[in-house]
Amino acid sequence: MKHKTNPVFPEGFLWGASSAAWQVEGATLEGGRSQAIIDLNSQTKKPYADNSIAADHYHHYKEDVALMKECGFTSYRFSFSWSRIIPQADRKVNEEGLAFYDNLINELLKNGITPIVTLYHYDMPCWVDEKYGGWHDRKIIDEFDYYCRVCFKHFGDRVKYWLSINEQNMQICYGHWLGVSKGCKDWFKEKWDINHIMNLCHAKAVIACHELVKDGKIGPVPGYVPIYPLTGKPEDQIAAMNAEELTQKVWDDLYVNREYSTFIKNYWKENDIHPDIKEGDMDLIKEAKIDFIAVNCYRSDVAKAPDPSFTQEIGLNKSGIKGDFTYPNLPGEYAMARNPYVEVTDWDWHIDPVSMRYALRYLWDHYHLPMVITEFGYGAHEDLDENGKIHDDYRIDYLREYIYNIGLAIEDGVEVFGINPWSFTDLLSTGNGMAKRYGLVFVNTTDDDVRDLKRYKKDSFDWYSKLIKSNGQEWGKDMKVWRDFENKSKEE
Ligand code: BG6
Image 1 (tube, rainbow, N blue to C red):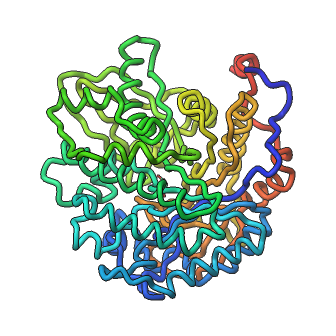
Image 2 (cartoon, helix red, strand yellow; image 1 turned 30 degrees about the horizontal axis):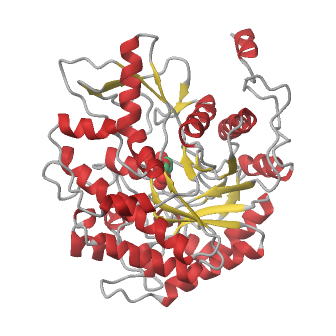
């Protein structure tokens, strides 16, 4: 649809940024917190950088909130660390852990910033892993329910927006990368058991939130990567649909329709997969009606018909050197490829602002639920220049064009109530630590040298601040984005 004017963002639109506990807090063994599996991974440094300090948000939270206020934020999306709140298997609640999040939440509210809290963002406590083998044992469902209930009861008077599990789809699709496959003998099959247990944990969180938090709203956080067919070949379209199903739609359908789709049931049958779905499980899932979808969307992918003669698993770019990415080829399912029409980051992520409009339109068409954007952002190699500045024009371009496309989606009729780019301060990337920075605020630390952890506003901070304070009217220099197909064709 063609829109003649710049988009108008609704009154009360939430403008903020995003983070996750293990990537930003540090202080992993302070304040009564016990270790999480992801800490152990990070101690091996590569591919994870050490998170015992990270951005040291634990000690800098007041200064960080003051910067958010200066930027004009009206929301902040962050996660609780389960092992900070319940550090041991005895289920005793850690008062110091609650106090840290109380202080953070109160500081946000005092500054007019709405907290949006993720309950689980990749940081499985070691005690849960030791006792149950992580997500393998159904007993984790009760532990997770107990943890969520502690959070809802304690913080529910002040936190009204809750997110269940961050990117469950990515945890299953990239199980080796994120450590979820640990202990599995046959990941191809067992991942569907783990996924089912995660679905039950998500359902428990949704039900408990509605029971315990007055006016509380809760949603899942799918990692959404729009997938286009590489060409107009019908086979490429089917491949794109297969990729869409097997990397995200299966999850989104479950959250919204609260039943497994016929696609995935047939896929299981075809592959002799029998997830352990017990009596009563689907009733629980049916009861878990979500209020919104939180969307993480950084990039797009393209799919093509796979070559039946060989199998190639996806190989993520871990070096930050362009081209160091292996596209998967999965016979019977799909293959993926480089999209020749868009640029890529140093980690080979397609930079595709239009895909954000596509994603929002797609999700709205399929699910008719309000959405909040909880992650999108530009990862880059960065360090201070001789004047103590970071001139991150590439990030400004990325944010401007992505946000503009969110605005266009709103004008197209999609309901979006806020955006929270990744990330506020620099923090550890899942794969590259501080070597891949996303922040609006530079944190003076590297993977090899802790430095002084001082905060420096990047150029993108000032740009975003102007946009927020004008409720999405001040876009800065000329935009590359196109409003309609006519303008795009003129450009080419
Ligand atoms: C999202 C995760 O998938 O992507 C974040 O929720 C992560 O935790 C972000 O940091 C960016 O990915 P990466 O690998 O560049 O850190």
